[in-house]
Length: 297
Length: 301
Image (cartoon, rainbow over all chains, first blue to last red; front, side, top):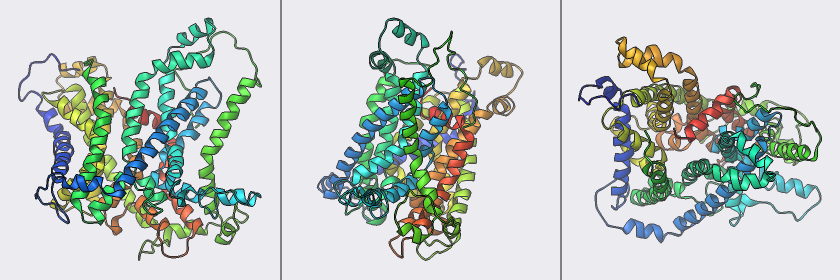
């Protein structure tokens, strides 16, 4: 903000330019260069080593006819939709509850947020243990007398993604609560007073006044959460290693397996380019709305 | 946790009706307490399981408190648990993680704070463009950049080493940290900066004498963000290191999810807690600053 009106001279900010070299190198060489490199090589038939032997869209054809990839996409969709809906609803409700000028707010907030400090690996391993059919929840309910009770998501190909969603929600909802709470705190107290004077019930005030006002917070949170969902990897590795069979395979894991295990780089590059495309579809409209429409300093 | 009541909240005015046990309060606190218990449950299960002996675990109930507390699983997890042929426990992964985390945090914060400062106070032609690319870089799935970085590291001879991983963490920490510092330095009153300029201070002079001393809180936020982020990383660890140099999360996963041998659930849970302990301690000590860190990371300025 300081230098908008200063005259431009090439050596004017020399120290600043030198100090920015790491940022420029990272941005251009790694982020931009690395991304372009992967996209270009996704059109080649690289196997063990990257080779510039172009084969057009072959890798993508093969990718979209591989059942394992289709399962990955489907799983990511299930995980994404469920964790978005539930984490937003639960996160917002918790934030709204904490915003009622309650006592011990800090304690509650600390408890709701602490899983977020833990890694996905730790989260995944704990939930793997809790959902363990021989010792965990299923066993306990059975030992209480309900012999036919079945709750064994991690070993059931149809349910395994729901088990992973359960753990993911435990880990991530606190973050959403925190962001929503920050948004709710930013709402002018007078609006609440006005609503109370007009005799509008609290839930209606939330639904018709507060939530529309929080739209920017919702959008930002949505983008962050969605960009995180696409990266889903560690949690699956820790909880199921993609099993049973391929039932909990996700794109990030597919990429890793093909790049570093199956020595099929071209497939890995094509799959990772598809991930990039997914994120781009999420990010570009948002960036356009956020930064394109109204220019701010 | 022991923080004083949040400052800056709107003060309630006038008298409030006091109904400690109204239906609304019972509902409110009831829901909050039930949810809080649910959130605490996994932590409780982890601790309880890690303190039991295997015979007791085989009896069932993971929720029951240990009848006989034993610290043997902790000792075993720390110094004897096996990953493949190595049976020296999690301690190796722990020290690897320390040797990865400390330099990565120092390096990334040093670079990002100077970058943020340059972007906030010393804009030059194109600086915003590079910054925009950097921020987009934060959203690009890492998978896209994994292999080019493997090649880069191989070229400079750092592939599979701890230094290589430090470099990777420094690179990927840069977007969010630069954003954090840029927004912070941009909020410093401009008069201060101008006064220093009039007095003849240059780029580094202002950075070290004025900006650095007054931005301690943001450095603490950055440290919290980076230490937890790097400690919890799994993907980069598994891609850029070898079994000798595996960080703790990777080693933990290998210990717990290894298919050979008898499953020792108590040792597994002890290992899991030990791995989670560093970020948890940081979280509980830092309290409000942790929240500020994630909020700063999440909300653009």
